[in-house]
Length: 84
Image (cartoon, rainbow, N blue to C red; front, side, top):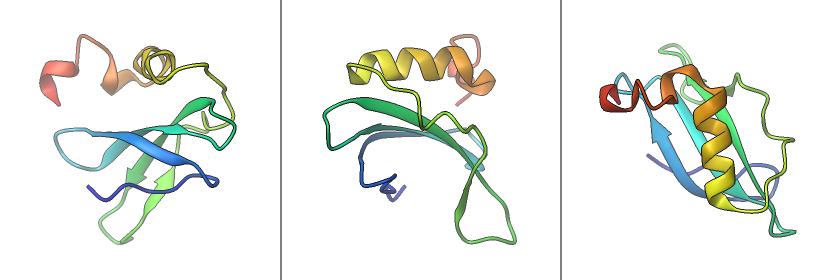
């Protein structure tokens, strides 16, 4: 997957579901804080649409952002990770 820039942030990790229609990006902002966002991809739209609205949350590390994403996004939960 091509990484997206979020609000002038660098995407460190993009995790897609098995159908490739949902994605969570873990990103780093210019101030060295981290965050995450959930996206949806529709067949009729070539781009990705923000659906989670988590991007304003601030974390001190990439691992903290990933942990919060895992707790916040149902398909990314540990019970579903084997289904990705």
